[in-house]
Length: 195
Image (cartoon, rainbow, N blue to C red; front, side, top):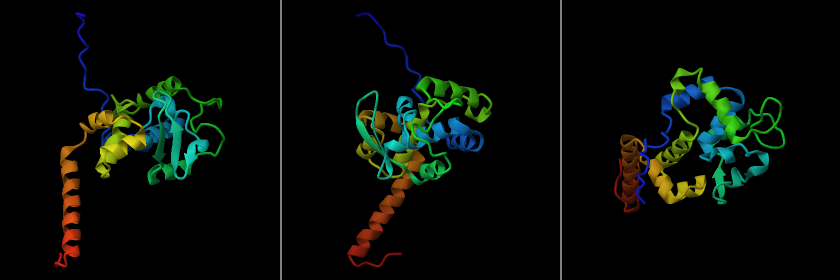
């Protein structure tokens, strides 16, 4: 139709280890809670703000995603579980404004933006970048694209697209460890001596 698409700038970037460490050390209160939920669930903002104790089911969050309608079960890994132990136990969503009202995605984003303005290490980060960070963390843990898709409720194509940011050197080292473990297990089954 004679229209040209906008040029992309590469999409939302995952957070670096240094940025995650800075957020962990310097963010507080509800913004810290939200960043932890984004980082360890990989959910969209509209779903993160609704998460609360009633969504917990057998060690994970069981939720219907607002945008897609997909039902996902997202495991609560140990780092997030430990963080959640420090949160006040109240009915309703985990994330609440100072007046006790639940956050909207937009209001949380505004408070997040204000908080990171005071932390130079977080210049340029986005909350949506934490979805990408979550995907890469799961990839480096050895999960397959379909497994990651099930956990975060993304399409296989989206997971694959987010994985393009994964550090290939780290991935290669992890693959080498897996190959060596596989080799050692095979040699053990065959009765050969292993180192």
